Image (cartoon, rainbow, N blue to C red):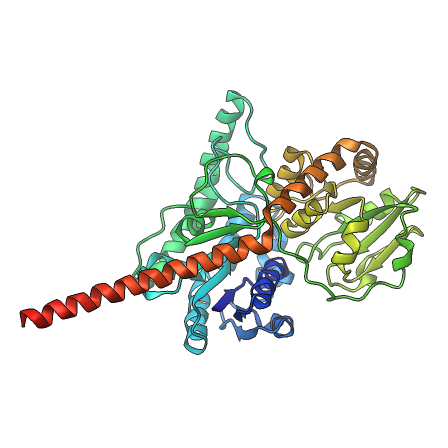
Length: 451
């Protein structure tokens, strides 16, 4: 089977897509990737064929402020989200769609596998089913589907527990619709109009969940707010970490169990200012004799972390997570979806602090599910961080809940689930094609008989 992957040019999207591609490569399938040219070397190192996105979609979301500089002066909230959605996702649709068709000219894929924010698939999904390969999308963020309590996504609101909360959420939801979802939807349908497809009626992030032939959510049901989902949705756990991408650090032997290991990360997008989380965490835990802090700079140079580095801290630009995570006692993170799910799959409890992109909603799920503490801010104090880390380390309830979550990840069997879904969707498409061919052959035969 030939599989074309389409990935938003951001590390948090590419990493899980490459991991899923590795599952298919190991199963003997031929893989090609359409994504940003900055990721060409990583794609080709995986053994996949590379196609670069055309101009208009070929940017590097590892530095989101270089793509949309205006976001630098806008506080997290509805206006930030509206502008980010329009500039990063909606405006890129024509170029992404062009890249898909150009890739298919050179690589006749049996199926397309995309991430949940590669909206260049929308013209295909809204057009004729017979004119495209089947499309499977992967949820690399929390599940963007309407909530039963009326709360909008992206604001980090926990499930309502009272009628008063529901009334409050209804007011917030109306305001969010007016300021974010409806303006983005108008922009989306203006972009889609030249394609000659029907307009989208659901919010941008909801639309692809319902329209995809299958939607693989990269998590487990217990980490998602309970509600009814479309039949397209399948929870498949978190993809296996790609091994041997980074060598062991020179201080690897210090993780010998003599001290509690606290891993600290600001991910690969919201890490332009290490003063938000990494610096206050270093300060918070500098005097904890039983703690060894391990800090990853998310690809940035380690000397970009300002200030003195405590003696109980070890820092690297990247770290081999397949080696590191089994040795970690707590993850301190701003809430990257992939990192949070990887931590839970190893039974690691969390302390989270982040409000940008999708992080408010991811971190709300951390607190709601009981696997950690959400500080619900972009700029936590050292005092709050120390108290939260000590609480998670010292109270067994958090690790016990994270351990039960790890069991749920194990029970799913990500490799087999991914292969089963992709093969089934591809096989269903083959059946439909054969049936359509048989119908057409019958029509032609009947026409000849009449003639």
